[in-house]
Image (cartoon, rainbow, N blue to C red; front, side, top):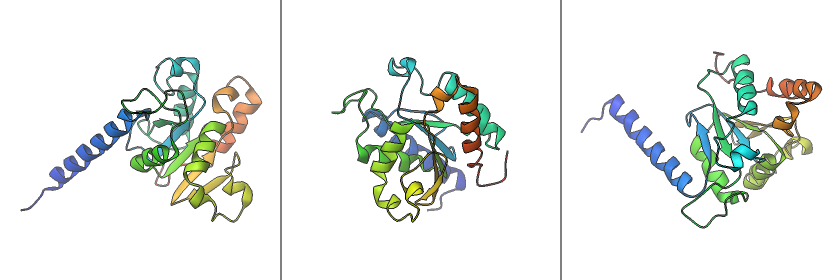
Length: 191
């Protein structure tokens, strides 16, 4: 039996939808395009996000979309992942950090080429979930995901920031974050 290219693509899309729905049922919060080449991980949620609002739906999301577009990502290349549990059908506590295995499973399901860790809580989650991959990085600061350094983790570029949302109120900090983000352009041709 022959399968057409469109049938194959449709089957892959259905499988991905089922996998992402399973993750959401287990407390993983995501927003945006699951097929994006970059995933933005947030661990320190603002008041609106803790109340159930969309992840990166405020000023931080607007600023990140503008920054990513400026360095060459397409406008639809925006995927957010929280390292904090949302409401779930299973035994996780909303507001607590995602279990390490679940965070890693979610990031692997999204399978981005780049990961932008927006705050210290997100970097902590990445350090825990990918300790086995980070330990082989020779430079200690890079292996510890020091803000501003790009680490190569299992074929992905990973960049940690130390408080993107908080930086929006300080011009100097905003410029520092912009300098860091410019290190993570799309791997392919820019948009």
